[in-house]
Image (cartoon, rainbow, N blue to C red; front, side, top):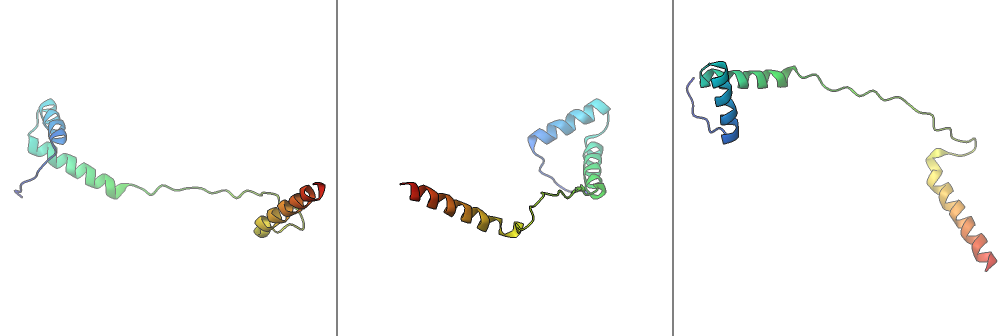
Length: 86
């Protein structure tokens, strides 16, 4: 298939050097680069992430879902203690 492409100057330079170094036609190098790039995309396996659970060791009687409420209560008690000393 014959077509017209606009190739960035930096890529064209790389392709021309590769063609010269390998002694192959520019057209062959371009086709090879496109083919390799497109095939690599389809063959790439998704990166898997392993997640290991961690026990944060909640204390009995403390609901970790209400941790912010506990912090607020402790801050309020601390404020009351400081206010009573004044």
